[in-house]
Amino acid sequence: MPRDSRIGGVVSSRSFDVVILGAGAAGLMAAIEAGKRGRRTLVLDHADQPGKKILISGGGRCNFTNLHTAPENFLSDNPHFARSALARYTPQDFIALVEKHGIPYHEKTLGQLFCDGSAREILSLLTRELATARATIELGTRILSVRETGASRRFTVETSAGCIGTSSVVVATGGLSIPKIGATGLGYDIARQFGLAVVEPRPALVPLTLAPEDDARWCDLSGVSTEVIAGTSTDGIPRGRRQPAPTFREKLLITHRGLSGPAILQISSYWRPGQTLSIDLAPGREVFAPLLAAKARRDATAAASVIRTLLPARWAERWLALHASAAAKDLSNAAIATLEGQLHAWRITPAGTEGFAKAEVTAGGVSTRELNPKTLEALRCPGLFFIGEVVDVTGWLGGYNFQWAWASGFCAGQCA
Image 1 (tube, helix red, strand yellow):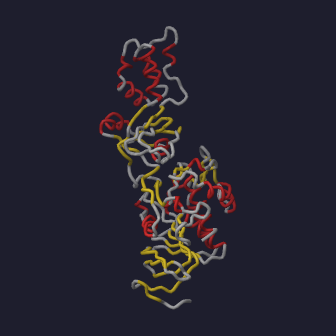
Image 2 (image 1 turned 90 degrees about the vertical axis):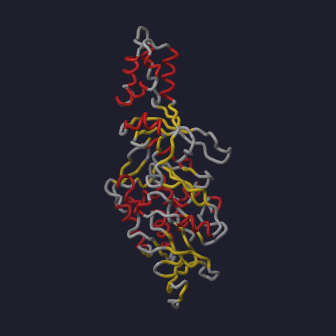
Image 3 (image 1 turned 60 degrees about the vertical axis):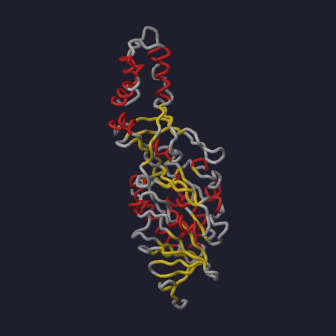
């Protein structure tokens, strides 16, 4: 045991091979893998329990991965960055771990895997693996600073419980989403301190708010939902600087402040202020086709009848009230075509998002151009790693972000 030394007035008497900052999904996975290699590993977290985000995920059942995980399911300024880590640790690898621990699970929709029971089973799996790997975890410990020392132990981590020497630091501190469970910007601060670029963090997988005019039109319908295809424009996007937004076919929900539901959460990760959403309210259907049949009624009553087969009654009535052509006594073919087109391309410009408090994840983060894609090690600072949500890699809704946590944690743990 080294002699006690004092750095900044805090007692230091310990050293580890690897110190991991953050006891979330990525940090715990990195600790397990580093410990398996015989590395003396310490996990630090300011929270009073590990894996708080794991416990609240998936409605308490933890959507722990997605069978269809591919690099295309992730948003980043460098869209190819995640490819290596995702190939090295796949959904099948984590499923094998779940099955090893006898945890029952099921596929819900679109490849999403959930525990049959509680998310606590996934956390228990990780803590048992952590113990087997002989890694140490210390909770209720604030990280005060990280600095290079120039010695064999390249870094000193100053904490509320003392200073720790280590040759590798793995930053797994997460993003800014859900501050009520302790989210902070510590990881970004460490990256900037060591000269690494940070892509501006922003809320992702987050409900969108509406401007006052649209709020007055729609938000009293709070609680109604329907299946849609949601996309966003590419207006104002510098060529080659941002991934084109995909479209998402899932549920849309009107809220008391704007729009939510899986389709909106998905597109929110790509949306930028000022962009317009294009929403297909009738995927794969020709709603007004019955009005084009011979001898069919073509008045507002007939239009209302067919649209109610598509949308909830209150939404259908509001839609027709806001589209004056539907009030005509005898709708022309052109008017019917216009109504059909409006249903398939509802254009609405959100005012903003509900912010980090309601965001499931944080987009942006430590620039992937600063990191080795195989190891997540900083290219300009050997021994310093960034993994999980703190990195500029953001998955779609449905287990993808957990898979990124497992994969990036695995890769760093194999090298730190």
